[in-house]
Image 1 (spheres, rainbow, N blue to C red):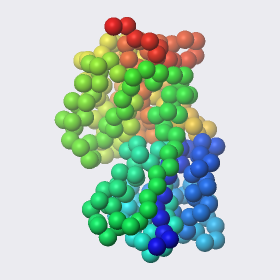
Image 2 (tube, rainbow, N blue to C red):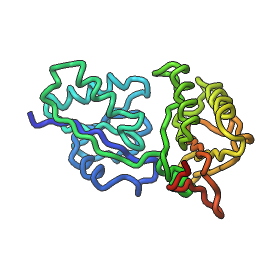
Image 3 (tube, rainbow, N blue to C red):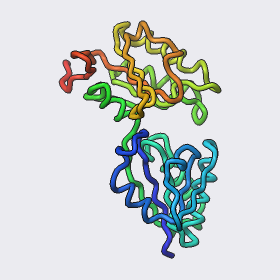
Length: 245
């Protein structure tokens, strides 16, 4: 069998942030599989078939990729950002584990620049010390799990990056998250909203936690909450690498 599956990250949006390694893998592909907006980022060419699908069929998409590879196709599964951060790498391995018939399919994972890291760079260095990353969507885990992780991260004085803070189908969860943070963090804790990071219409807003409102975030917003030491310096935001006992 000459087929394979490569799982790649296309970065946060700007084409210059797609890694050379990912470009090389895409150039060798016969098939590209992914969520509709991400597949649209791939330039069509002779010998390449594009397979776009809806956002909530990740296991079906992964199974499709593995099946194509088993028949000899060179398949690239695309995600935005990094494929291992709330993206398709886990789904592919879940399908791979569930179906022993795929045991001979070679799989590689090629990293990309996450929205979290792109947002942090645009702001300065708010993730300069210990931090954690939390997906605020409760589609695949109960809200009680999210709430516990939020509280524990805040009590540990971690800086935090939030993916999927608020959507039309989940309009209230981010408000609940802000309420939890206000219970656990100081009012002056800095919280940043990076919308459409790395795109031409990128928008960065930083306010004290006491001034943050739920309508400041949507699905195109990456939220970064600083720790107790995060501070402004000129137009920049950073968290010192040193910490007091």
